[in-house]
Length: 430
Image 1 (tube, rainbow, N blue to C red):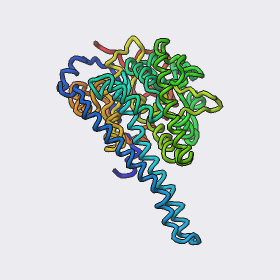
Image 2 (cartoon, one colour; image 1 turned 135 degrees about the vertical axis):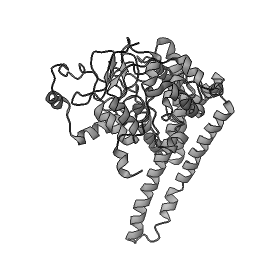
Image 3 (cartoon, rainbow, N blue to C red; image 1 turned 60 degrees about the horizontal axis):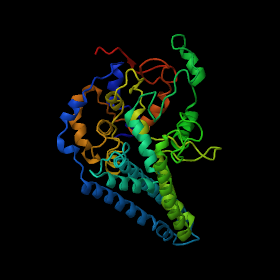
Image 4 (cartoon, one colour; image 1 turned 60 degrees about the vertical axis):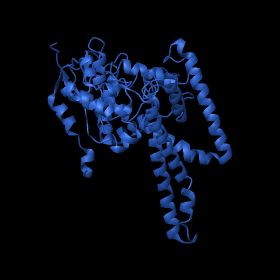
């Protein structure tokens, strides 16, 4: 791909823009299910475990290679007094460590994707999509999520809410967009372009700063301060869920104790280099860091980033209020993206390439989702959303154009900082 195409909209996105008007779909779940060959619904414990073991093996290989970085780069300093060898060392060593953090971060993100399939409603394990036996799903989910410091049962509960109310602006758990009223903007009938420019326009540098904050630090403002996936009394959970939240926390504390022992044995710098830096890189892809900005307990509610943000936040994708929302419409309010090409399929287990199929049928194993996608596309027709726009450009596009939605209306599309929407809803004839 020529370099300039990394900063262009994909043809599928352009086609959705050209339509201009949107009628909410009327989709038959029964018809979709009949389009899928029955064998794709079957789960194989052995096959799922094989994928999991392969993932662990790659992580171990990356770790073993990383343990050799310092010795390898030190061997380059053939003469301590040589400026050339010192320069080579100062360039190669950080480059190799960054390479390790990036790739190991991808494998950590892939663990989160696998763990999701083990839960009731998140990823693969959480959806009971890896094995026909719920206990095996739970064991895999707890193990894999704990390895990336994610409370398994906490995410199982909140992600269930997301699947049950996808892009329902009143009930969804992820990235609820601000409304015109939230931003204290003038009414749409009287506002002019200059009104939006005065209130919303910002410099590219400041926009980039805000994007960085969203990627790494800021949580969902929907919940009050103190909301956390680690807190049993959090508003995210019902009272009957508290024992499961406590169990998740206890398991995480046990794993943190193992990490502390590793630090005691090999040093905190080794722990940071081999575990925490890849963990930070992984959080850029799927979930933001539980860090505080002047707060002891950061709101660790729904901070899905990059690939999960791009799945549902797009200028051409609608949100619904309850009178127009249905499960099928929510499932279709997502976008399949070939995120990172083969890397996304191999390491992230089809989470972005086949997300529409995943929302319709979350209990189908990830390795069957590509075939499911092919089966349902003819049924969905123009309502199937795919976008080949490169991920980083799509992230910038969504972040800068998905500014707010209207405070009224049953079908809502994002408006940009000038109050303009690419697509407007029209009445459904059905």
